[in-house]
Image (cartoon, rainbow, N blue to C red; front, top):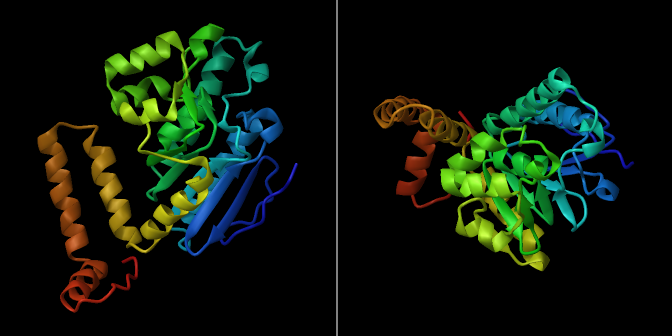
Amino acid sequence: MTQSTSFEGNSSVNYTNILCDVSEGVATVTINRPEKLNALNSATVEELDLCFADLGADTAVKVIILTGAGEKAFVAGADIGEMADLNASAAERFAARGQSVMNRIERLGKPVIAAVNGFALGGGCELAMACSFRYASDNAKLGLPETGLGLIPGFGGTQRLPRLVGQGRALEMILLGNMITAVDAMAIGLVNTVFPQAEFEDAVKIVARALAEKSSLTLRLAMQAVNEGLLVDQDSGCRLEAALFGVTGASEDAHEGCTAFVEKRKPVFKNQ
C-alpha cells in the first residue's frame, strides 16, 4: 500500500491506509484503500485518529479536505469482515472507538470538508457527517445500509443524520437502508453542493483555499458557537455566542479585519 508523505506536525508518521499532504494551509487526507472501496477497517480508523490529532495540533494547517482514493468511493462502509463474529461487548467497543474518531474530526476546531466522490455508505456516510460540511461529485451515492446486515449505524449515524435532515428523513434512510443520489442528498440537506465529477477536485480546493485565508481563531470560535449552541436551548446558545463574539472582538485579527475593511485592502490575519 502506498505510504503518505510526512507533514509539519507534532510527529512525522508513515501511514499504510491513508495519505496526507499539506499545501498552503490546506491539508488533504485521502483514505487510500481503493481495492476495498476505501472501507474503514480498524487500522484505518486508528490512522485517521492519529492523523487528525496531528493536524489539529499543527498551526500551519488551517483547513482539511477529507476524501477517498479513486472515483468509485469516498468510503464504502466499515470492513464487514471485521464485524461478522463480534459479540455484544466487542461490538460496543468497536462502535465506541469509531465514534471517538468521528468526534475528534467534528470537534477539531478547524473546518473539515468531506469531498464525497462515489459511494459514502455506512461508516463512510457517518464519517462525512462528522465533517464540517459535505461536497459531493455528481456520481456520489450516500446511505446507511446497516439494517440490511442486521445492524444499526454505530459511528454516530443515528445521532448526526436526524440533526442534519430531520427525524422523518433520517428514519426513512436508516430503516430502509436505501442509497440516495448526490442530488437527492443535497435536496434534504445532507450534502451542501454537488459538482460535476470533472470539476469536483478543483471546486473543493477553491473553497478550502478561501477558508485558509481567514483567521483560524475566528473559524474555530464560529464553529464552537454553532456546535455547542446546538446542544443547548436558543437563549443559552445566544449567551455563548455573545461571549465568543467578545473574544473575537478583542482579538488582533478583528482589529486587522476592520482596519483593512476601512482602508479597502485585504486583511493579513495573524490567527490571534
